[in-house]
Image 1 (cartoon, chains in turn purple, cyan):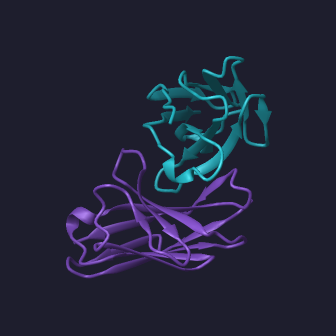
Image 2 (cartoon, rainbow over the protein chains, first blue to last red):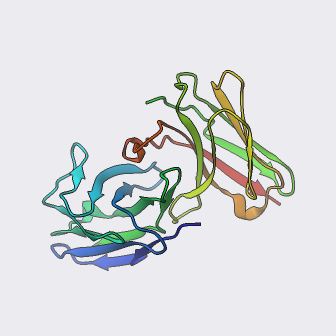
Image 3 (cartoon, each protein chain N blue to C red):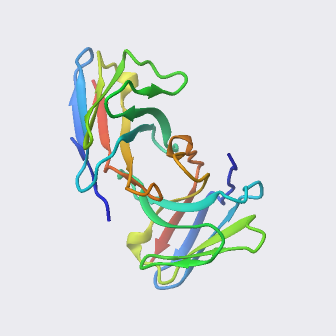
Length: 115
Length: 112
């Protein structure tokens, strides 16, 4: 099946620094990718839709200047958490729709801890 | 979009079948039923999906009632590695993945 790779799997950073998370579709092209965040014992919440070659679409309440999304190619989307604070600590997950659109595949997630 | 209702938790004995129910009474005629699971600290994993007919793959079987208002995911022989949160999701056809709503899911614990 289609594979979505996410890197890094875990990152610890100091407050005020920026962190970049990569999401790659390994064996298919994805014009659209999705970014979620998940707090402990909670369900996934969609943050934004990443569109190749155009601006991302953010869900209500998600700060676009804080969570920068770049979808520069058909196989790579990046999420940069800028000026991270402890409240940004969370599990971030990306996903992409496989060709044909009938299945959505997820990355393995990135656990961000901001000290 | 139609919403789903699942029991919050379920225990299952290793080697036995696990039957996970899901209610989606407001589902529309062209909306698919999808099941995903999420093992702790990992991204969700696709299990199976269906529209009207029952479906089976190497992981599970999906039974959809004739009126489509509910479905059951069947794990035929549960193993300890099947311990996870299972999400039942309803999705319209077409480019609608961005509208996907994950509910609380069912926490399945498989015990020896």
